[in-house]
Structure formats: C-alpha cells, structure tokens
Image (cartoon, rainbow, N blue to C red; front, side, top):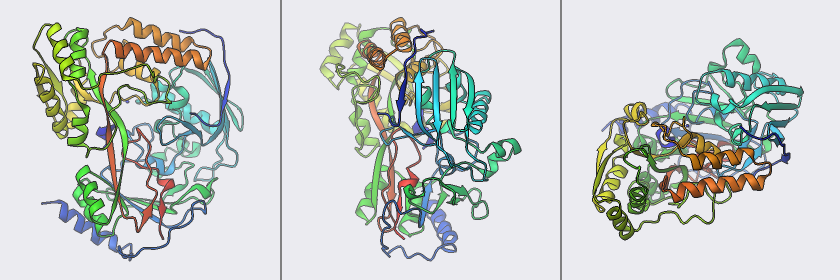
Length: 525
C-alpha cells in the first residue's frame, strides 16, 4: 500500500494567529497464522462481547492485519505510519479530512511571516520516563533538519529553533514557509525520546510519547509487532485499545482468511474482498488514501500545446478507473484541492469527461499524436483504461509497466512524459507548487519554467493576511486549471475489512495510506 501514497523571498510584515484547531500460497499462510495466533488467544470468533463506552480509557486488544512490513522505529525513513503512529506523536495532529490541524503535543501555536511559536502540553512523558519539554522538541527538530531524508527539506526555511522555556518553542525562519506548520503534524516530524536519541537505540526501542509502548518480548520480527498501554499517557480517556497487535502478511487473501477465522479483528484488504466481507457477516470501510491524477512531466515537448493538454483532459474519465480498479468507491473531483483547504477555488469548472470537446480540441491541435505513459505492473487496469480513452480521440499511448521498484527509480527521470499517480503533496498549495511546478520540483524533471505560477506562489509567500494568502493560492489553482496543466483527479481508495463482533469505529485519515486511526478503534471485549 505504500505505493498508493506516491507520489513525497518575501516581505517582513508579520501577522499573528493563535490556533487551537484548523480548519495456491495464501491458504498456507493463513493456516500458519491461525496456528501461531491460536497459541496467544482463545477468543471464539462467533462470540459477540459488549462494546466498552467511549471515553472510559483503554481496554481490550485490537488485532490488526497489514501487508506492510516492520523494519525499525526510525521516523525519517518511513513512507507511512503503519507502525510509527503506535508509539510516536507530533506537535500537532491531522483531522480525518487530511488537512485540518488539531493540538497534540502542542496545545496552541502562533504564526507570523518569519516566526512560529508553540505552547507545549505539560505533564507529558516519553515511555522511558524522560519529560517531554521544549529541549526535547529542539533536539528532535534539529535531528530532522540535519539528517538526510525526504523530510529534511520541510525544515529548510527554519534558521533557528529555540527553547524559550520548558513549555514554549520558537522557530525563526529565513523566509515565509506556508506549509511548515502542516508538515510539523506529519509522520516525518514525530518526537523521539532525547535519551534514546543520545543512546542511539531509538531505532530498536521506539520510545515516544504515544498511548502505547513497544513490547519487544511479545513481538516477533517479521510477523507481529505488539504495543501495550502506556500508564503515564496524558489522555487515556481518548484511547480505545489497551493493546494493539499488528500482524504482517503480504497476501490479501491470507489476511482475509485470518479475519474470517477470528484470528484478526481488522485487516487491510482489496475492493473485491471488501465486497465479500460485507456479504459474509463482516464489514468493510474505505477512505480516500491519496489523490491520483495525470502527471504531465513533459510540457516542453509532448504536452507543450495547451489545446492538446485540454483534449487529453476532456478525454479522461476517472470514474472508469474508480469503477474498474477501486470498487466504485471514491470521488472524482474537478480540481486539486477540496473545499475548505487553501487553494480550493469555487470558480474552477475543471475538465469533466466530454468526448466531443476532446475530439474538437485534438483536431484544432493538429490531429493524432502519441506518447508513452509509465505506470507499474499492479496498476495495469488503470493504465489500459487510459490508453483506451486516448485512442478514442486518435492519441496512441504506449504503456511501460515495470515492477514497482523499477518504476520508482525511473518515472521522474525525464524520459517519460506522463504517469498517473499522486503528486505526493499533502500540505496544501505551496507544497503542491514545490513538488510539481517549481523549477527544481521533483514533478518537473525537465525544469520547465512556469512564470505565472511562480508569480502566484510568490504572492502567497508575501501575503500578510490569511485572505491575501488564500487569494494567491486560489489564483495559482486557477492558472493550473486554465492552462490544463493538471487534471483527471480521482481518489485512490484504501479498504479495511473488520469483524463487527470484535471491533467498531474503524476510521481513517485522508492521505494517510496503510493505516487507520488506531486510538479511535473500539474493541468489544
């Protein structure tokens, strides 16, 4: 599922805001799992037990099945938070909508153009007894800033990190950083015990401030990772499970068989298995794990003609992808940002499927063309549908479908003009710009200049009021739409199947792939 998450200068007038919230082998695997888990549990899968009342504190065991593999507890090397979210927390958390920020280790924050100040939660401890305070935040952020990783650049604008006192931290910036606070709520910014960092054993111990602590003795590397309730957690009433066991099996059929056998309570699954679960006495739930769309990497050559880009956009029917590959679940929005997120522009009409318009535009653009689309082997269905759609307007699309590791190493090397996947941005319009349109953006491998978009981004950086900043991001979105530089949006949905006799309240966060909100799950027992 990690693959589904793919993608990863201004004035000095200051403003200030305080926020407490922003807007043939599968059967064998299953059999082996059943034998292994049976030694740990005598629970009858047909027994329904009363559900505990929400807010009464952690109780019961949650048994999760995933196709993700546990490596270690390092935070800055992970593409998802399947395991790390069990033991670590960030300064802020993200609401289920994927962009609204909420307090976590910080209770409030203030932003100006060149400064961010956090007020930290008091009475918080790491699992090793070390107090969580401003010094701990400084050590963690400095480590992230100085450690080569995909998250390092998110702190590039931070020139100084200061512990004002035990409960206040100040970040001084070299330039405005609109995505900084949002990025500080993401998985790459988890807080690790300074004592563990100093000892060098955080990768094996996983010592954070989270509601559960790692139980190494109960865990089996390569099979199961176990965490148990942390008795000094600051908000026990908000936590559902007292114990979480995450079992790792790559095959979705084996995971589903283990669910049916009563050995697991909730499992990652596929659209067909989710449908089967609903018919066999289980339940399923889905969520928009990430937004996929057409990535036009070569707007210097293949996609240089605006009319050709528009023709391609109108010829795409993302609903076909959703129906064929994603169980018909998920939205097909007409612009990059949802309502409520900076960058959403209510005037944008987008490019709804319109074959007649597409044919007329391709004729104006000079007739039939061809190009290569790169995807990967497990996404053949979507790639083939795209090729079929383009053929209806006389565009010949050649497909290259390597395996996923090969795809990762080549898809943005400048050789391929297009792909269909996420742009990797999660933190709003400025993050989107930096990942897709800036001259050094990973999604701009040919370094194509976009002066109008650059100017809109610069306006956003220089804005001194929320209204001015949002107007700039709306302008950026409008330029992208009017120039047909992005289109074909659809939710790449994730699915969970679960046993309603064992657990309830399985909730996920948009853009958080391969994980659900463990703390909100309610074991029934």
